[in-house]
Image 1 (tube, rainbow, N blue to C red):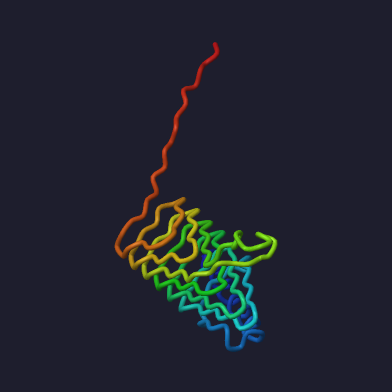
Image 2 (image 1 turned 120 degrees about the vertical axis):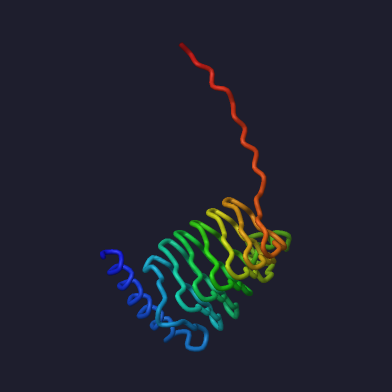
Length: 187
């Protein structure tokens, strides 16, 4: 019962919060009345930015959505992002319906352009769209980098770094080698 009350409060809070954002971003923010966004999720939008939330989007505590000026970030229906997920968009991020994110997933559609004159201090970026298909599962602590395209129904194993193409109906597991060292006992 307490969980239902908490969910209802969260949905009502999300609606009022998004309505306030809508006042500042009239044409840039689109959402449905029933969204469940934790009060601890930071949402930042630049001038001309577009954030589109499908029906029943759920974003848990500690997350962040940052949409830069003139960038487009789209969440499909029933997208669920667990605790600590962050989406940083300077060009375009598109997430298909039914996709779920484990905790602490990071999605970037840009990299710092460290090769430019002046290096990182210049704050120049190389951007490329990120597209995540429908009904995907993105495991905990995954990092999705610019230019990535993840096909429908794909599964990304926890702790992966995604760059490039992941075909539909596939599983991406990055091989990790565990090294076990013998423990010497001192008796």
